Length: 408
Image (tube, rainbow, N blue to C red; front, top):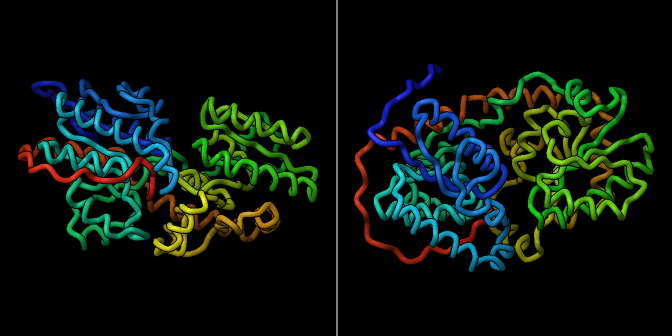
C-alpha cells in the first residue's frame, strides 16, 4: 500500500481518542503513528496508556481507571465512570476534535460517542463489540452512536453490513508488527534461558481483578505440573508496577516454585515459552500470532458469569477459536477451571508434538489473514471522515447506561 502524502492543514488536526485498557493502547498508538505520517502536527487527547503517551498523546485521566471488566464489577465503579464520561463530554464540547475515536470499552465509549455525535462531532468506534456473540440489540446503539466502525475480524463485516452500519475490516496491528517466522530462539537468548529447558508461560491478565481471580489458580496449576515434571520452568510477566507488586506478594506463598517474575516483557515470555497458560483476551491473539500452543482459562464473578452464560450465543470465547470457527485450543472456563484440569491440558500440549506442528501451521494461516496494514487502513478511514461535511447537532437523548467494561 502506498504511503499517505504529508498534508498541510489550515490548523493542526485535533483527534479525540479514548482507550480503556492495554489492548486499546496498542491500537491507539498505531493509529496515532499512522495519522502523524500524513499530519505531523496533529494533536491527540482523551484517555490512553503509555504507548499512546509515547506518541505524544495527552491523557486526561489514567487509563487504569477505565480498566474494569464484567457486568457486576462495573456497578461498584459506576459513579466514577459516569463522572469521567461527563468530564470528557464537557472537554470535547469546549475543545472540539475533528473526529473522535473510541477504542474498544464499548459500554463506556458508545455512550460517549453518542453524546459527541449529537453535538456534531464525527465518531468512529475501533474494535467491534461482540454483538454477533451476545447482546445483539446493541447494534442499534452502535448505528446511532458512530459514523463508522473499524473491525478487527473478517467475519464481523457481514453482520454490520446487514444492520446498515458503515464498517471497514482493518485486520490487527499485532499481525503487522509480529514476524511470520518463529522467534523462540531469539527470545530465549534475550531472557538468558537455556535452549533445552521446557518453559511454560503464565499470563493471568493485566487488570487487578482478573489477576486476583486467576493468578492463584495458575500458580496452583504450576505446582501440580512441577510435581509431575520437576524440570519444568515458568515465566510470568507483570503488565505494570501494580501487577508486579500484586504477583510478587502471591508468589510468597510458593517459595519453592520455579517461577521467574518479570516486569513487562510479555511478548518475550510468550515467544520463549513452549506452551502458555493465559487469561482469555487480546493476549490469546498475540500468542496465536507467535504460533504458540496455549490453554485459555477465565473466571468471572459468579453473578456476572451466570448472566453472561444466558446471553452468549457463540461456542467460543478466545480469538484463535473464533477466527478459525472451530476449537483449536482448549478453553477451560469458570467452574471447570481447576488446577487439575488446567495441568492436564498443559501436559497434553507439551507432549503432543504432531498436534503442536499442525497448530503452528493453522496459526500461520490466521496470521496472514489478519496482516492487512491495520493502523494505516484505520488512519485512512478516520481521516476520510475529517474531510466530510460537519454533522448538524441532533436533539439530546436520554442518558445512556453502561460502564467502561470491555464487555465484548
